[in-house]
Image (cartoon, rainbow, N blue to C red; front, top):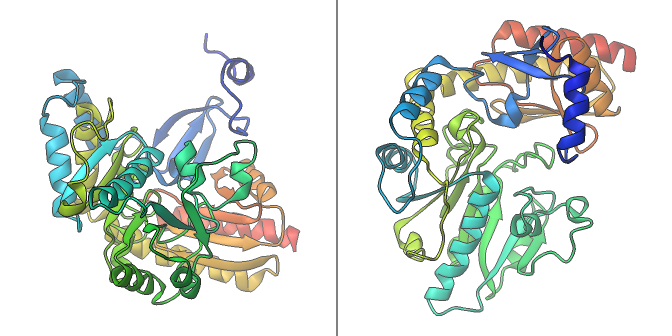
Length: 399
């Protein structure tokens, strides 16, 4: 006999650290853009594991690639070469600005690698004092001590002080503030092309080009954290392609393996030379099973035209949200690119999330009053229309 929902929740609360405020449902199955709970109730998923399951749940090609590799070779040390890791790295290099890839297990680890690399790069050049990194206010780069220290949200640091030294902060979208902060101690600028956890805050026109220009003029490296924006989320393979520039270093994770743990740091040859044997490593980074699945994920994105479809359906979704804004005074703003969309509201966002869940839709709230919509890139018009109708009804009561 299967355990009932209350038994599972009670057991989990006893044995799992309470680092999340979990909703009182137990997800047991997923297919495409639909999730089912232990009671058999279906939910349309507009969270996608927080921008992870870009191909939806249980994609058959990914499942097949994962199963096939698991039968051949599960894990070996990075002391040896493997085919899946090599092929995935080659694909990423061939489809980006980069020449080299470092694999790890998460976005935070990818950002840790980037932080270490840019410091080591200047140290190797004999510029030991060039070690500070400028990040953005309201940014989010991870929860390890280094990435927490690089995160521009004081509320996330509370209780963990002292954070690590070496990070300075300027407002996002303020090119003058950035220019005035860079000095001879600055080695890099770390920035999300679109701030995800900070509220889906998009760059002003020409802002990122200005950041690139300042970095070029001062010899400062530019790191793009594309953990949330990468792999088709913004209608391009990588978000930087929307803005006509390239970074020197880029970090990826989340959607890279559609739910399996992987992170990657990409960079150019002359910068990557700062990492030599012993300077950085990861036991599970780029394991054969995960990279085999990831390689299939990125192939599907291209071969099945998922990115182009996501861009078009994202435009459709955004127009639906704008129409809701025109109808309801409780909606302050609509913003985002591709299928990284948000709606700022005057009401408690968590209440809207709960009301949508009761109606069979999973959405996300950040910063207290910003509803974030990050569904699988395969989401359909009918599913978007159904959510829009649900939100319309909810805001009729809230206005």
